[in-house]
Image (tube, rainbow, N blue to C red):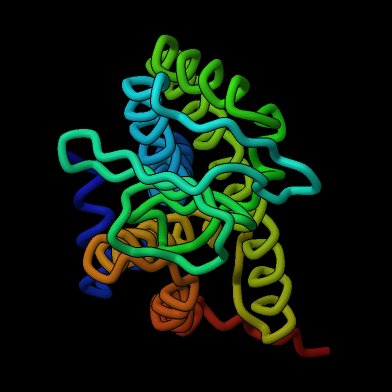
Length: 241
């Protein structure tokens, strides 16, 4: 498959000038791949939230009475054990990492969700225990629909953002190259950048899987590819009078 030949070409620093022959559809494919990889953290978080809502739906009769006012929990302290899955309701701000879901004073903690508390403002439709039961029930019923819509929107937005960034960078690199007396074309830069960013995005995916962290510093890995491509650009002959 031609696509993997292009990836091999960029990784082995070979035949860089031939990136001008890359079809534009490969650029669009790269943008889609980047968008999908960038969406992984949000998609994972959404899956965790949906799974948490399913568990809540199973124990709705045990959910205590509470209210959310000014993004703060006011209600009973209670822990529910659903076959080893712990759900707690607490007026404390301290995170108990032993529980799987915790409705705390200042937000909702979901285990594995980057170990952070989500403010209640993120769930504006939940103002009391009845709202929570209804929300959990709705999420459980329509989880496939919500997930498909969420993933589609997320990938589209991030892929569009990636395309804009790549396009802007290609114009910048083209401008700089021409100022430095190199034969350059913004479209060729765009093609090469898209493959370089795919490589960096794949590295970011591995970092996310291994360390459960997202870091955009991995995109500095594109610099050697861009510099090498610049060095391969033909030097324009200066006109003599």
